[in-house]
Image (cartoon, rainbow, N blue to C red; front, side, top):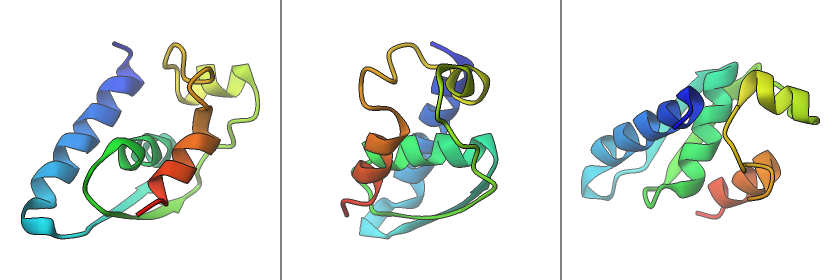
Length: 89
């Protein structure tokens, strides 16, 4: 597991804990943590409200390697798909 994937898992764990009892969870994040938060919200069953600043643009393979190095993430749809899933609730 990459370090970035581990950070997403950490955020998912925090969302699950904070969302006990059906509460919506607010996440405030900047930089690479904003990217991690989008992916965490995408896979979480808990409703998440994202408040993101200074999120890096992930437009190329090099951008992903620099800011979100998770093998196979582009094949799974990348940040665009994660954003759609995070906003589905």
